Length: 297
Ligand code: R5P
Image (cartoon, rainbow, N blue to C red):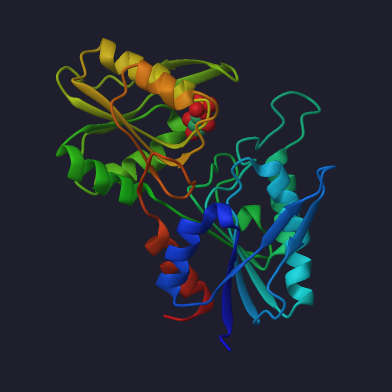
C-alpha cells in the first residue's frame, strides 16, 4: 500500500486527477451527502495511509470550512498521521485587520482553525498584505504560499508578445512585478479605494497605453468591479485591447459577462479555482511543492 494518498471532492476532479497523476499517488474521494436540513454526511476511504494530502479550495468557503472541520479528525481516526491541506484558493484572507471597531479579523481566526486541523497548509497567491507570510499566519505549522504569477506572465507573453501588464491596485504589485519579470514586460500598478462591495474608485499608473495591448493582472476577481473599472480606464486612455489574467476566478454572479460588456476581450485564469476561463494549470506547480514537502525529491 502506498504511504501517500490524495483526497479530493468530485467538484474539483480535474485538478485532483492531474495532481494525482503528477504525484503518482492514489486518489481517494470524499463522498458528500447533504441532508434535507442542510447538515453534511461525509465518507472517506476507510483505510488511509499515514500521509494524506487533502485538496479543498475555499471558494464559496462557508460549507467547505465545515467539511474540513469534519474531514481532518476523521482522516486521523482512519489512519492518517500527517495531513496536508492543499487549498489552492484560501478564503477569508482579505479581512486582515479590524477596519472598523469590533470587526472580526477573519484572516486570523480562519488561519487558527486550519492550523489546528492540519499539519501543513499549501496555497497559491494568498491575499497576504499586512500579515506578510504563511509562517506568520500559521505559527508552529508549515505554511507554503506558491505563486502562479510566473505562469500567468509566460501565458500572456505567449499570447500577446509584449503587452503592458497592469495590476489594478498596490496590493497587486507583488504579482505583477514577478509576472512581468519573466519576459521583461512593461508594468505598473494603479491605486484603488473600495467604497463598497460593488464600488471602487481606481486610478491606473501613468504608463503610455495608446495603441498597446494591456493585460490586467490580479490575484482574484470576485465581483469583477476592480477589473471593470481598470478596463474602462485603459480603453479610455487608448489601449488597443484589454485582457485579464487572474490566479483565482471567483467571478460571482454575472461578473464575467459584465467584464466583457466593459470591453474586456479575453479572460484567462488558472485552474486553482475551477472556472470556464481556466487557461493555465497550476497542477505541476502544486505537485512540485507537495513533493518537496513530503521529501520525495
Ligand atoms: C483585493 O485587493 C484583490 O486583490 C482584488 O483586487 C479584489 O478582491 C477584487 O475584488 P472584486 O472583483 O470584487 O473587485
